[in-house]
Image (cartoon, rainbow, N blue to C red; front, side):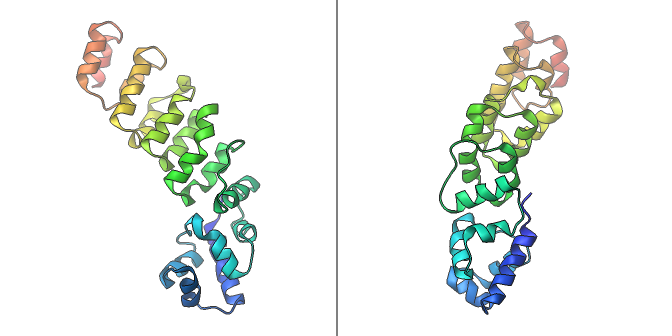
Length: 211
């Protein structure tokens, strides 16, 4: 996992080596001194779009600066690619995405997960990555995930990142026999949909007790 405390310490060391104050560094980057202070204390991480400029001002390469965070080789390589404007199109491991996802904008994480959506992703990884995606991104991954092992607890974890339409699509999978019917319990869908399915014999009477 990328360590923003060590990354911040590297910024502070390089700034002092360059004999710059926090105000001077902030001015060079068109930021506030408070922002620089938070970076150095590991309280926040710079927007990835300024990492190359930050490294240049501090007299190092983007790769050298990023490696100070002591992420895995995959996380470091991925973050450097994004910082230099390269969104990897293939071969990106979900674990590497997850390791740097807290540092990225949701739109960037979305781009990184396009191939995961095509290739499929396991349920446990999906529940972790969902926190960094939009509802649409979560649904895209969910539609390409083998949901056979989905539990009510996993679904509960995903629900805050899903809109109503996404929940209805989950219900459709349940009604089509693709997912366990017990998963309707955490779904926040209209009771009338459940009642209709029970009347049609698609769901057992017990399903009504969950609502």
